[in-house]
Amino acid sequence: MTDFDIRAATPADADFLVDMLVEAVNWQPERDWPRERILADPALAHYVAGWMGPTDIGVVAVDPAHRPLGAAWFRHLSAEDPGYGYVADDVPELTIGVRPAWRGRGVGRALLRAVLDAARQRGIRTVSLSVERANAAARLYASEGFRTVESFENADTMIAEVGA
Image (cartoon, rainbow, N blue to C red; front, top):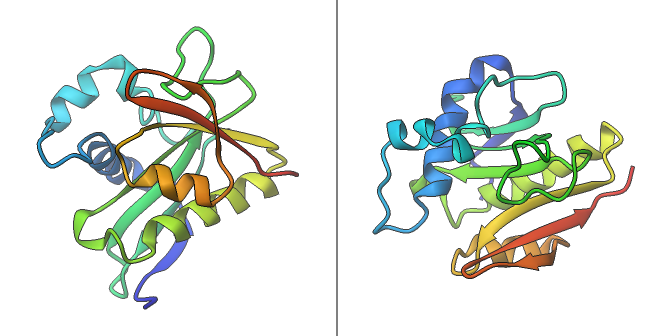
């Protein structure tokens, strides 16, 4: 079923990307961190603060009425302010979130493929992410070519070579 489309993210999507960061953080039903807590945490807020910068890349899934339902985006973070999936300054880090009602319907995979295509078109060769091992998204990433390069207690840092 393809009852959604993918479009490029714009600066106007900043608030929606915050919503999707909240969804990504709260992927477990028992975790219910409010938006304010996430934005107050510098380790999380840097995934959305100042969107859209000159090196930011993103895509948004929209329903037939053009309402956003998911997003995937890359940011270049630095060694001085690394993300959970930080690998190197020249390797952008992926964040992806999908509204709960749209999960399991192919939205995440479509977003992932679209944002990887956008990165490839910008000449990016490698991308990274961090995912908690219990998250079903870990299987999605592995099926799309991501491999684990570092493991922590409950999460892995994964990279994908996307070519250029």
